Structures are given as C-alpha cells and as structure tokens.
Amino acid sequence: MLGSPLRDGVETGSDADADIGSGEFAVTLDHVSVRYGKVENAKQVAVRDVSLAFPRNQVTALLGPSGCGKTTILRSINRMHDHTSGKVSGSVRIGDLDVYARDTRPELVRARVGMVFQRPNLFPTLSIFDNVVAGLRMNGVRKREFLREAAEAALRQAALWDSVKNRLGLPAVRLSGGQQQRLCIARALAIEPEVLLLDEPCSALDPQASARIEELIVELSSHIAIALVTHNLFQATRISHRTAVFLLDDQGSGTLVEDGPTVDVFSSPRDPRTLAYVTGTIG
Amino acid sequence: MTTGTDLAARDTEDVLSPEAVARRRRVVRRASRSTLRRRRLVGNATRIVCYLALLVALVPLVALVSYTIERGVSGLSEAFFTQLPVPEGVPGGGVKEAIIGTLIIVGLAAVVAIPLGLAVSLFLIDRRGKLAASIRFVADVMSGVPSIAIGIFAYALIVVPSQHYSGISGSFALAVLMLPIIVRADEVAMRTVPEDLWDAALALGAPPSRVARSVVVRTALPGLVTGNLLAVARAAGETAPLLFTALGSVLFTTNPFQPMDAMPLRIKLDGTQADPHLQTVAWATALVLLASILVLSIVARLFASYATRHAR
Image (cartoon, rainbow over all chains, first blue to last red; front, side, top):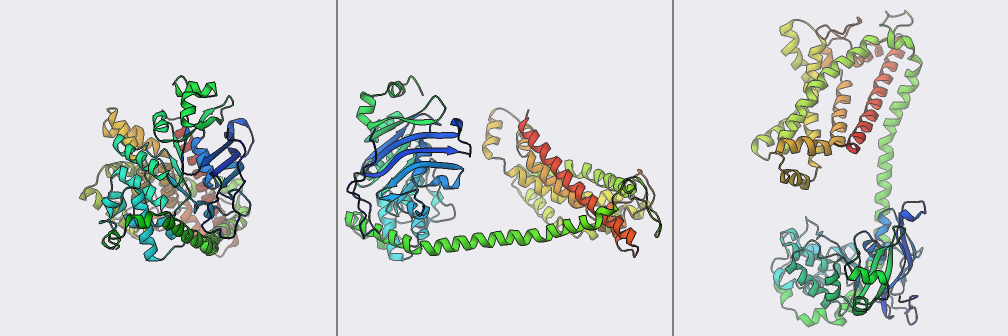
C-alpha cells in the first residue's frame, strides 16, 4: 500500500488556474468505498476501502477480473457516480482539489480529468473537429484560434493528426473503430487534463488497433497521469508502471488486494491472492 | 468548416511543448471557472422550466379527474350497473346496456385490429423498401383522419347497404380508427429490440418469422401491450364514429347486429339533458369509463412485466 495520501508540498497558492499541484501524485484515493442503493449491507458495497495513489507521468493499471470494482473506482475519481445510484465515501483528491468536498462542483472536477470508455462514443452528429473541441466548448472556451490549436495538439498527441488533418469537417463516425477510439482520446486530451482515465479502451478493438492505443498510452504517460482499467494481464505488464490488483472479497465486494510497481506485483507479489491471480489459478 | 491547411503549417514542438500545454490548461481552467456560474444557471433554469411544464401538464389532468369524481361519484350505485335507463324525471335506472355495449363494440374492434396491426407492423419491421415506406406513410396519415370521417365512411360502407344501424358497424369504425395507431405503436415498440438479438436468433438457425415471434415480440411485449392499450383506450372513448353506426339504444342487447348503446353515446345523450339526475348519470358513466381505462392499463402493465419475467 502507498499509505495515506501525501499532502506535503501541495500548492494552495494563488495562481490556481493552471495549478496541477506539485505533489508526487496526480490522484489519491483514501479509504474509498462505493455502494449502490441505500441500505448498508455487504452485498451492495461494490468496492470496499480502497486507498491508492496515481503518480504523475506514469501508467497505473487497475487489474482484476470482471465485476470486482475497477471501473467503479475509476468512475469515482471524476464523480461519474453522481449520475447513478452509487454513493462514494472516503476521500478522493486530484492535486489539491478535494473531489467530494461540499463546495466542489463536479463540472470543475471533470474539467481537470479526461475519460475514455470501452467503446468509442463519439458524438455521431458532429464532425471530427467538433468532436475534439466538444469538451472545450462545453467548458466555455469559444475563441476559434484557441480551439484550432487545442484540436491540433490533441490530435497530434493521439497520433491522429496526419491522417485527419485534411478532413476535419468529416463526420467523426466515418473513421475506423481504432481511429474513433483515438479520437475519443484526443477529445479527452483537448481540455489538457492532468489525469486520463481509460476504462478498458482496447476491449472493442482488434490487436493492431489495440497495439496503437497501447503505444499512445505509453507516450502520453510522459506528461500525464494515466489510470488504465484492464482485465488483460499482458496489457498491464506491457504498458503500466504500476499495477493495482482488484479481487472480490468473501463478502462479494471488490477490494484492492495489492498495488506497487508492475514488475514487483507480477514477479514477487506480497499477497497470495495476487500470485494466484497473476499465475492464472484464480479469476 | 475548418480545414487543416493553416494548422498543418504550425510547428509540432510549438503546440506540444510543456509551455503550450500549461498555457492551454490555464485558458481552459479559467474559462471553465468563469463560465461555471452561467452554465449552472442555465442548467438550473432549464430544470425549473421542465418542472413547471410538468406542473402545467398535470393541472388539466388532475382537474379533469377530480371534477369527474366529484360530479359522478354520487351517481354510482348497484342499480347504475344493473339497470337500464329510465325516462327523464323518473328516479333510479342505470346504464347496464351502455357498459355491455362498449365492451362488445370495443372488444370486437380490438380482436380484429390488434392481430392485424401486429401482422402489419411485423411486415414493416423487416422491410426498408418503397412498399413499407408507403404503408408507414398511409398509417401516419390515417391516424390523423378525423374520427367523424371514419364514422361516415363506416356508415356508407355498412349501415347504408345493410339498411340497419348495428354494433358491428361501430366495431368496424373503431377498428379502422385503431389500426394505424396500433401499427405505428407496435413498430416503434419492436424497433427498440436491439439488432444484436436479431443476429443472435438468426445465427441459431431460427427463420425470421420465428425470430419475430419468439424474440422480438416477446422482448418488446411491454411496449406492445402499452401501445395497444392506448389504442383501445382511445377507441373506447370515441363518440363520433358510433353516432353513425351503433347509434345508441335504451334496450339491452348482446347481438352486435342490432343497434347498440355505448358509454360515450350515453354520456353525450344524458349529459346534454336538463334533468340533473340524467346529468349525474352522464358524469357517473364518464367516471366508470375513466376508471375502467385506468384499471385496464394497470392490469396490462402487470401482465407485461409478468410475461417478461416468466419468458419461455
């Protein structure tokens, strides 16, 4: 475990506009549980007591079998449970921002976080360009020149610029599945988030397209924190710096079994359940 | 539309440099923060408008139901359901013949229109051609035809040649009225069944007709039941087509080839009388009509949810 979140050195300074905090971690979860419904019984606790930190400029893989709460934890980071019946307890911090503080607006949380889902979910009525800048427009950015620059930067980062730069006005859904997913990543990057949440971004893609996304993830991790949900052991070993293993506990709730540098988790796990999972005897 | 040419000229390093990223991040954060208040204001205003619209929409409904209950509840008695109408000025009496008449007329119409509508919509669901498009168009146009026009059509087609008003001609008129509504409602309900389920069933070797029956109709059942029920309810409340066809009667009959009474006809007849007793009878009839549609829709929904849970 990484223990309690590091708060030393976190800036609370005046120029908060571009502040991404200066701590070691982009996101810290402290004793986070998510439950569905109102009654507090074990069955409705989807994930129990997760403390986990996502370092800057690294890929952290959330690994584990289906239904053990990886996605639930991911969605707790940018308050996506506000729109479901999920109740989040514990503390989530993005930089110096307390995500679940009473006066924290979910819109402002999401303006600092990019999210990409299992299947490409581009807006079908919008062009490539309009899809990329959708998040900027929704955040109130209007200036054309700025939108163009941000779109170019995002598309370049998503390794899509060269193939779409001459047809930005085309409907986005004309692109292939892999390109659509990369466009989704570009859309998430356009707001210059400090953390990128990827929920099994390759699950609907063929191996070639998956490989390109994986390359992209590695490149992006040079300047942004990435949380990657996957149930693919090999994907985790290939591209993640750190791995957090989730499994179901005996009450049927998801729980964090172990986390640490990916190499350590796979080669010398501390928890016997991790060993069983990574060697394929459970899960 | 934006083209790439002017953008392509820019230096890669320029837009991806840490400075550029930080600068853009600053702009986005600032915009996000400074417009948040306005965005939330617009959001809340939209929400309030929606709630107000809901309230405005509910007012006439609640008023109608409560007024009908207020005026009609005193007219309800055992005699109301078991006796026939009495002349003006005579106390007591009931509308048994109208209740039975409505059941028979609407029942016969539904027995014809529901299967026919389902068949037509099943034809439509699997087709994209010109024929299907024209059927859809005709159904849309027909559901807008005034019910009085359908009444006079039934009158000319059945009542005049047979030289006899009859319940069955009323059923015919109502069936014509219901059919386009049912066709469109069924098709909409079945369109909500995911394409994946078609694929799954076809891949298992089921012929399309079997897919439609076992998968599509069953999956869409709650929607089908609701849509058909709305059509039945609409027909049960129609007066105009029955004026020309079933005509109305104070005699009790279960013979659909005789003139027949129906609840809307009874409401129209008694409600326009000066006698307060007859007016109360009309209100009570309206209340029963309203209540039976309510009960019918509750039963139908219960059935639909039961059917989906116990799918075979």
